[in-house]
Image (tube, rainbow, N blue to C red; front, side, top):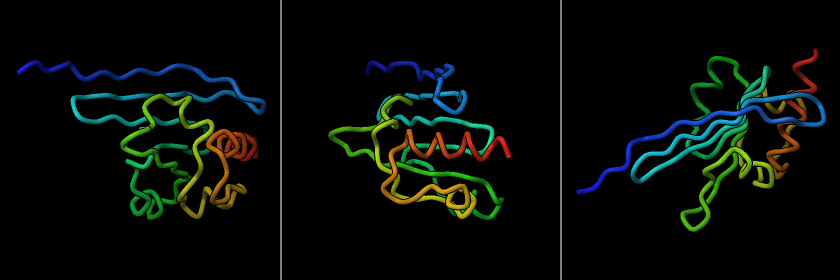
Length: 112
């Protein structure tokens, strides 16, 4: 049985309102990606919202499909937000926003 070693990558992403870190992690049979800002995270559907909600964290998630998974942080740019914590909503993120719009709102909120 051939196994591919897991991989984890990160790089800086530049947005209109600042910079963030894009991450992707892959392993046999799975993957996830995220964009990390100073305010919170825009990520794929692997993120659970219950625990971040309990800790008061800003998390907004988008969901891919088995046919079109979200594997790279750039995949989140056009993906639609399907869930979020109260802190993410407090910075203006709404269901249906693109991941790019959610990141921009987090970057603005991080400025205070």
